[in-house]
Length: 402
Image 1 (tube, rainbow, N blue to C red):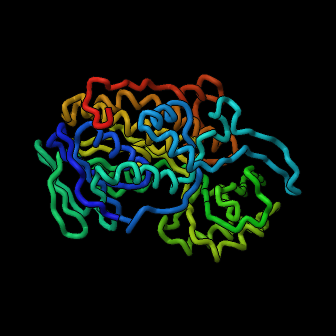
Image 2 (image 1 turned 60 degrees about the vertical axis):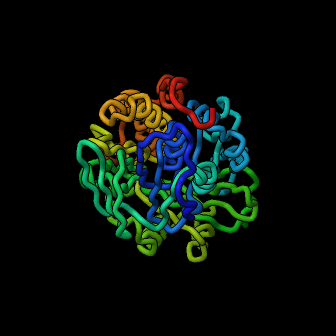
């Protein structure tokens, strides 16, 4: 999937920006950078867009960013259409009910809930005609000077860019290359999550089901394709030493840790061998003192992962993309001024969402050094995590869609 060079608009600057990562944060940033007049290249190590993944949500200000992107209709058309969630006991009896319309669509189940792969496709479709995508490649080396960044790709090509942004996730290769090893920034919260798709042989109909037992959980989430469902597991793990790319080892670990699980656990695990997709990783956060180094910056999980337990990773990526592109353009593409303004706007919002993530893990009674926040659940904290940031309109900036 390489549509080639971007179309040029008459106001396009000579600013060339390389973005690493084509999941959500990367294409969202590419959307706004292109609208602000930059020439954008997105590099993705996978051979194409990665399908599947867990359901992700947009709440509060993130929904406003989607609206400003002009993608509200496209995103909602691709949503899971989940009506709500039930927590159940071992016999499948309902204990609690959460509806998608609760809290104006910003509750436990958001009214904008979409599979990660589906949102990625929406963002790619929106940007592919104006942005260069390089699939099946990655940044192998880079060196920067006061005027630019020289990049060598794994495929051997060398190019020079004005700015390089890492939007390549929790295990960001660009972050490790420029800022330091992963263990310097990743904070484990003592929990592991697994997701994969299974046949919907459970009568699932628009309602998510969640079962919890002794710190472990099993769940089923509906999909737009009513013949399939998403299986979800979580279990405590103070020590986690499985390679995040070793699927066989991950599946062995999941079977071991979920042995003896009640409810539908055994039936769901039976489909591990025939699932077309599988994801397992630690619940972790990325905590950094700064999100930029010279002309290199970070965005999304690469910079400030709040963990899936916050329910706000996608929101942080979308809001961060809007603000990063806006502040860089407002600073006339000066990296120090633009990155500083971006971080100043985002930092408190990020911290509130990371606190939510830690608190959610703590509520499951998982023992981990970094899991317990300083404050408890309260409406003010939730409001800060969902809406606690201002979105400038950047009306004075170039906009190719104005």
